[in-house]
Image (cartoon, rainbow, N blue to C red):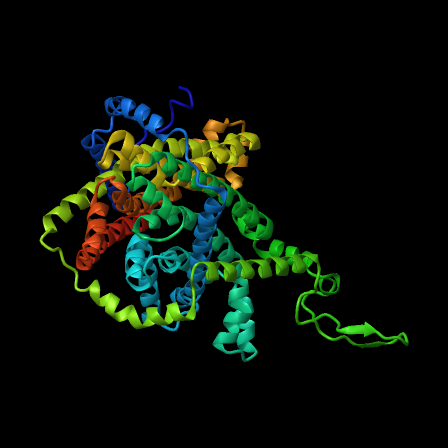
Length: 592
């Protein structure tokens, strides 16, 4: 009998132990199964909305004739005279720059109150977080409608609308950055007797400033596209001229202005991206920094210190200087960085940026008289929107909210597959070719540069009034944003396991499915739900140009001065947005 035959037979207990030893995946738990079921319900809802809206090839084929007719009515493009066009463009840029600057000014104190390590207390933190969520959930158009009651037709309406809504994004990201600061400098100032304000200005804000600037530049890109939407509610600039041309069915002028907006968005995003990479390399490369610990980190810190300090780690540097007689004397300690080329360059950029903000504020009509008038009219204007009401249209509002949700689900589903594919091809650690990754990054950038409102206007003319145009516009818009988020998440995966698999001879496809995707999966799922959140708000705005949904009711209520209905619409959209956001937070927590 061989040794193999002499082994004792495996008992059930031994068999289960061997099976447990061979198991490489954890058993699915109740939270994981519940999260998977929630995602499956969302996917089923998208498929149901896609079918319910009759988004199919036949619908697009039937619209081919309308597309040809629209092209004949659109060409040749009718551009305004150059001085008029430059004036409209400068007016729009002035509103966008001033509104973004206003959001930064408002976001800093709100973020400090919302951050866990700088808040004045739990109640202040809850209120500040609620303000951030409310500003993000309320559409820009609603802020514009309220501001229009105070400032009338002009740039101030757009400045207030963009500034208030942008607090939702700038405030949230700034609060997150404050919570992630190194507490060492602040602790040192506190030990030296510094007060709370001195700690914030001396230790907190200097660390947060690079992230704040990067967020402001990114928000500037978004506000430029949003400013086109505000033209439909009376905000001056190129968006207002575009809305006027659309209402007159002057598609030659409308599409000419749309092309100008498109090219401006491309140029603006490219320039702001270059500025971020040039002035803030530490922010753009932060996710690629090695996470060192222990002795390695201390040694790296010593190597980064000046030679006098590195030679004697743990000891204060010798503050002496050589005198004219050859002796030594105490050196005057430096309290500010030297005026080298980098500091001069940053100062010049800061002065130019402040000058641009001031000039833009003057062009937008910002004045002390306008602010005084706003302060006097704030409470009466707020009273116009309270209490919420339906004006006998409660059933219609619920039906149209359902249509808006359908548009959002279908639009997210349309853009999901192309966005994931482009995101994978744009991730350098997945494709392995920097040239290929840059090419697909450029494709994503081009798609992102197209404002969804312009897509909706074209598709409304081609496919007709209704939710089909809105869903298609959101689908195309989702490709740009979701593709970028997916690519960023894939590139932020730790490179260690990837290199280990490549060293064993694994192929790129095997590395992607075995290492990259499992680690990026929670972030990708969160990004998809975030895209659904964005699409719900965007679907509300697209209803203004005839894409269906509750946005049409919002615009009509504002036109007939039923501001209680406007408040009801906002609350309904806010409830849906908070539900989706809560689902996203929970799913990411489960899969993390």
